[in-house]
Image 1 (cartoon, rainbow, N blue to C red):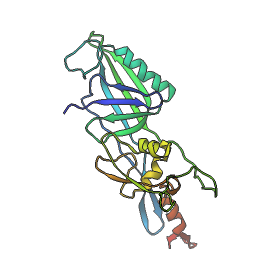
Image 2: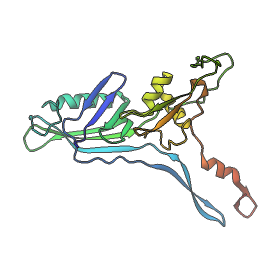
Image 3: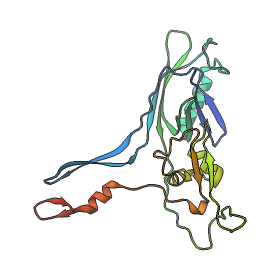
Image 4: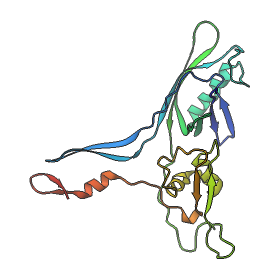
Length: 242
């Protein structure tokens, strides 16, 4: 099955499908690990949650010729594609990068684009460096008598909880926008579904719990480093763990 790579700008409701699918891509999925040295105990490696991913697409062909291997609907207009990508890079546009037929559906910023020509064909080859992004959040406290109204059960008047089965192309950001009107709530939606270990990856067929807005838990920001620090005690001869 031919993969198709695309960038979507949700703010402008615009999609750009790469005219030729790159021969390879590697999405880096890192974790935050911290190594600490404890006197008389040695080293300990602590897990601090997931980190932002990144990817570099190399030798992406923007064709000047109508080659038979172009993605359906592609145009032989390399600098039109390049202009759109460079505009997104210059504006810091928050994009969704997707690879068809895979779970890859990541919120990214384009960090750098390198472009040039070779072989005298007028084709343009570019390298796209992109990094995952997330909107910074501050804790939100519910005030008595305030906040948006939540859907309520017609019999009891209590806020209702729904379920949703993930479809192809879904991501938590769009689901948070659909149910809460705010895509930045996607981490809190992930926290309401403990089976989700990475808020940026969900799979078709998963059944998600959709609590009312007032029932969303806080985003998971636990820091094992802080827990470790709290368990250390100075004895006078060095640090020991309680």
